[in-house]
Length: 313
Figure (cartoon, rainbow, N blue to C red):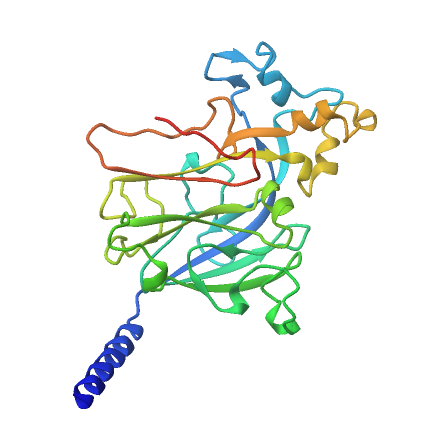
């Protein structure tokens, strides 16, 4: 009986060891942090009712530029993927992705490798949810009492680079009862609120084995997944531009920047951008679906107590 129990334990250890040695793909991404101007309503209209911004008394509050109003265009920091790590040619991306970073996809047993370069003017990082990482790939700044060589991932300085390695282990992937792919996010975690309101957030999708094609490249004619024809990622967020690192730069866009009181309640409300992927009032483009096609919707919210959203189709 004792030998039987020992044999059973040995079998479990051997099986566990064999499973632990399984390896999937290395999915490599070259991601830059870029500072660019972002337009929350590029049409200049409320496309839900067809009115121009000036004609719509509600949209006007948030989108009309004026003496003490920034309007619809803000300076932001955004994650942008490139075809290689020379960071010269931007990778193709769906237009509906808006200001979000590239969709990072991997399946169980895969390793995600992200070569990140910071072209911005502040310290930034990349911190993931839903995957396994070593301390040196956490990308989160906090007083953890670790030595300096464990903190290089926490805050990449302007002009600096860092390589993050994240793993999708079975215990972090979808369970048998879950959908084929699970929805997560990644974001900068130096000052989480200011970093994310500045624009540094993106989608991270973890999938069951055999769900993803070998290539991560976006192709409007072919899905990256075998199980669906299309998938969309939507981030519902009231982006508080008052907390952005670039508030002072954005105030200069007002026609009378010296007269702006950044603590004025009306000014602060005008910078609360109720958006989906950084688009407001129906300006989100590209959500085109053909009849009888299988579609996966990935939805997330990010922010504070105002970011509890009711979503309906």
